[in-house]
Image 1 (cartoon, protein in one colour):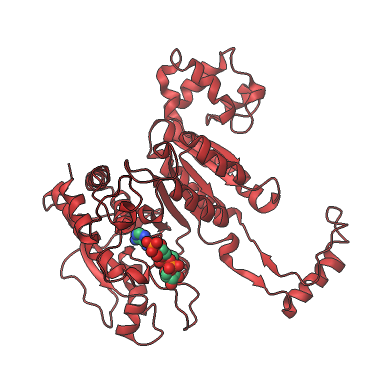
Image 2 (cartoon, helix red, strand yellow):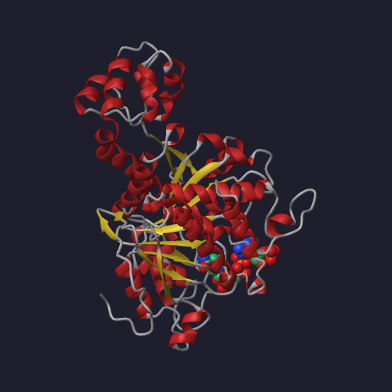
Length: 475
Ligand code: NAP
């Protein structure tokens, strides 16, 4: 047990451990929480109230979270001194107890930390940022059918633009780099020959590695294994038509991983059906099967490959009633989409998607766009997950002008808590909360941000009353 300088450890509770990236959660875990700056003072008590009530209602005292208050952001500076935004105590506590939840944090202006959220992700190597976007009936939305969107964005959290390797146009390194590329690298490359980087350009490097991509996509596919029916579907989102060796490689490494690691693992029973039935099916044209079922069923049988790819999905749909007792539906579909196309498709054909596995920048755009469709950031939760730690957090900021007024919407942190309960495997408590939120919104018992968009206008609840309304609607 680490020695903490200024923290009060709960008197009882156990540690969450990790086995192969999976959490092993005791019945009474100790969970560090960071209250958050600004509206964190309003949001955190409301969130804790809802989580504790749901756990108590579901398990009647056999399970309980022992909350452990740790500090980050402005509150940490008050306790630990100026510029101590992320004290060692907090880092040790999260490292030791494995899973934490946090409210929003102000981005520090001095003290050498770029962003506390980014720092936490890097320190604990939380390489997958997970953002579910689903619609709660009654939430005001700019879309006609927002209920059709139910996706989980898996955004890579450590590479791509998050590496932050950039040089300003007049930096000597930048000037040298451009000279080197223009005078040596490009002229000696058959592919790049006639290109020239304009002087006065800034330069950014976008690293995308095979190991970084695959560990992230592995988490997305593992998640799909826990879903049902058509939701067992992972779409690799990329801009590989333009950036072949970063974005395109992300797609290729994703398919390679699906084939090499998940084919046998996911499908044993389903595999035998697909091989037995499709092999003899005149409807299936092998040429149609682009990637995952490769040309030649003999080879397929020999290699026991039985993931399906989207090209045969329609054909299988047309025969599923008569073939294989729908077993193919339990398989995981892995396909890919160009990033610009996914922006259109989450609006025009949202029901066709489930898990979107993305690189860092694409994931940022797509998750905010998806959140907007289902009603905005006030209801968008997030989690940052690695192999030995996970931090659940709001996706919005500290909204300082609303701080301390007991009016802000606590939905984003509460739903992050729901993700944490699901991560623990405490599904009953998670379901109580999502039911409670759905009913509160359906009954138009909501905070100001949703109330002002409702037609006809409704009176807004306070932050704490919205939490109580959720609890009242547990079923
Ligand atoms: P912000 O805090 O997200 O607030 C912008 C606006 O979004 C608010 O004025 C409010 O709009 C709405 N909003 C935010 N939280 C809401 C909630 N819980 N419920 C309903 N509406 C909500 O963005 P910001 O003002 O640009 O950033 C403030 C600070 O937060 C900065 O220091 C920033 O770096 C930091 N930040 C932290 C995180 C994080 O910790 N994850 C994320 C983003 C930003 P209305 O006033 O129109 O109602």
